[in-house]
Image (cartoon, rainbow, N blue to C red; front, top):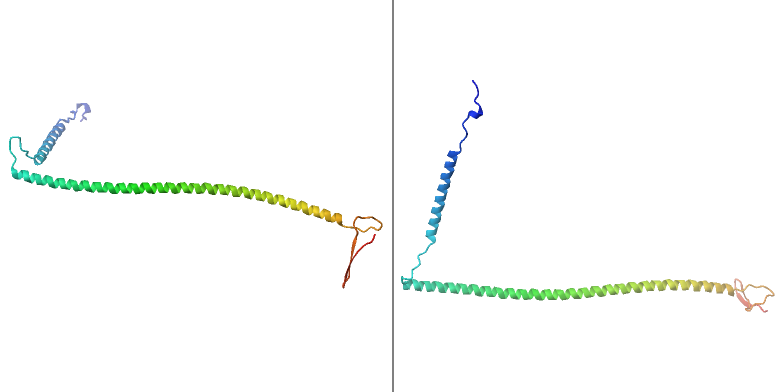
Length: 185
């Protein structure tokens, strides 16, 4: 018993599947057309032709309906105008607020600029004052040094027989008294 070769087998046919798909597609198209026609018949209204006169009752009903619609539309327009007025006033308020905020920002920028200038001026004055203080300290040190030098020069050492422009002063201290005197030359 031998096995059959694949070449000997009959090829697979999709013809029956294609038939089924074609039938289903046709049915789907017919159903959608029926639904579309049914929907159009409900929406369509009969309008009188030129040759048929309008019924006066229909005309008065139509006039009343149109008047109500006009009144509704006028109310809607008035509401929208009111809304536009409210919106315009809100826009005006926002523009005024924006202008005020811009002025405040300008004032703040001016204050910041002035504060920065003042800070720079104060820093410069501080630097100058520190420089002046340092100069004064140096002058004070020089003056003290000069005063010390002068005091050293004005000290008188007594040397008998020497001639000085200044006369020496003698101070004698005792527990109960103090004596000050000049040396005669």
